[in-house]
Structures are given as C-alpha cells and as structure tokens.
Image (spheres, rainbow, N blue to C red):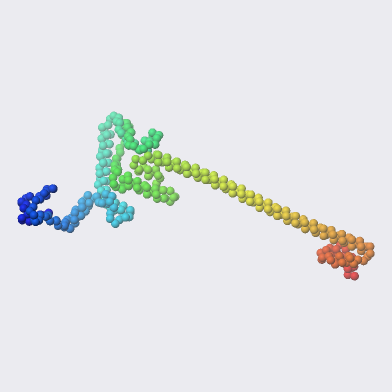
Amino acid sequence: MQWVIDKNAGIPKGELTNRPGLIIRKNPNTEVRRDSPPSMPMYVHQMIDTLKADIEVISGVHDVTRGQTPTGIQSAAAIVALQEAAQIRVRLKVTLHENALGVMGTEWYERIKQFWKFNRVIPRKVDDAEQNALLGMFQAPQSSYQMLEINPNEQLQHDYKIKVRGASIMQSSRASMFDNMVRLMQTPAEDGLPCVPREAVLDYLPDVNKQAVLNYFNQLKQERQAQEQQQMVSNEAMGQIEQLMQAVQQLSQGLGQVQQRIQRDDDEAAREEIRDQGYQQGMNEAKALQTQIDKSGQLQPELLQEISMLDDEALAMLLQQNPELVDMLQI
C-alpha cells in the first residue's frame, strides 16, 4: 500500500518502512497516512477456482473423494454415485499399485522357493477371535503374532499367485465392504431371512472379539428359546384347563338334560296315575250302576244325573262296558 505524506511533514526520505512497531514523527498540522489497497480483481478469484479445478481433475481427488458433501446434495444414493464417479482415476491408480505389489510378492515367493534351504521361523498375525478361542478366554482384542516354522521342502512345493488387497478408500476396502454387508444383513431374502449371516458381517469389523459377540447372541437365543418353551408349556396348561372347563360345562348340560328328562317322566307318571284313577273310578261307578240295574232293572234319578255329568270320553267308556245302557238311556 502507498503512503501519502505532506511535503512539510518533516519526515526524511526513506524513513517510512513496513517494519512492525515503527514510530513516525511528523510536524504538527501535517498528514501522514497509508491508502487503502484496491479490491482484488475478479479474475484472480476466477483463476484460483480454475487452477483448483485443474488440480482436482489432474490428480483425480475431488471434494467428494475427501469425504466432503457437495453443496445442495442430500441423497445418499447421489453421494455414492458421485464418489464412484470421482474415484475413477484414483481407482485405476490403486488397482495398478495393488497389482504391482502382487507381482512383487509373487516374485518374492519364487525367490524364497529358490534360495531357502533350511527351516525358517516367521511371524504370523493371528486373528483376535481365533487367538482368544485358542486360549479359551474372552478378552479385549489386541494385535498378536504367532511364530510359525516354515519347512521349504514341504510347505513351499506349490506355485501361488499373490493378490494384494489394500485398505484404501475404494469400494473394495474393508469399511466399504462392511457397509455393504450391513445393508445385505438388513435386506430380507425370499424366505424372510437376511441375505448374509451375522458371522459374515463380524468378519469385516476391525479389532472385534468375534467369538464373544457370537456367544452373546447365542446366549440371547437360548434365553429366547427357554422363554418360548415356557410360554408353550403355559399355553398347553391353559389349553388343558379350557378343555376341563368345557368338559365340566358339557357334564353340567348333560345333568340338566337328565334332570329335565326325569322331571318329564315324573310328570308323565303323574298324568298316568291320574288317568288310572279316573279309569278306576269310572269302572267302580259302572259296576255300581250295573249292580243297581241288575237289582231294579231301571236307572235311578241320581244315577241319571251322574251320567249326565260325565264327559264324552267317560260316557263312551261307560257305554262300551255296559251296552245295555244304550237302550235304557234311549227310553
């Protein structure tokens, strides 16, 4: 920025510098000031953005590749599509790099087969779940190694082609595979079960005691089965109780029907007894009438009155037993 100084300010030429803490002495009633710089031209910002875009295109590393969400995009599917499109150049580089490591590993193995003549001891990294299972305990996962003795004459007889898979940012990385496995586990198949089991998802978790997790879920499964069995036993007991209640209700209904049948039989017997009594009374009256007729040959007035008071059924029965009364009554 430029300085503006009056001629009579009393400041010698070359005394004004950009040194921090500079003390400026001037004459009274004079002016010493620094002009404000002009604003940055727009072409500078445009050139910066252009250079930035060129660098991203040449290197193949964009904002979405670094994990930054593009402005105005919220859809997960759209972000994944942008990541795949942005990783085209990086994916090729990573693939070539991994292939080169595989070729170097294959050549290294061939040199080992060629020059190793004696047994060698090499370290082998052991999986945490495998190590804990071998030790028979469940503890926090730790990085551990197991020493193996290699016999070249026995264990290095075959030819191998080594393939290297690095934990990169590509879709084939361990984190990406874990995300895909989680989605597959949440997706049901035709039979209603997940597409992949829980054990396959745990394989992609870093530093996780897989055996402890599986034992925990197995314990939950056993407890759930025990509860289901207990519930089934309770349901069977309730079913038996309901069957007994139904049997008691049927027995009560049967007893009620038996009581009704006994009551009907008693009523019928009472009616039969009444009919027998009426029949016996009619027979006695007929015998008495016959006796009176036999003695006098005529019907008495009291007997005629009693006959007139009989109903049709009793009168028909009396006439059937004493046919001679028909002529006497007509007279």
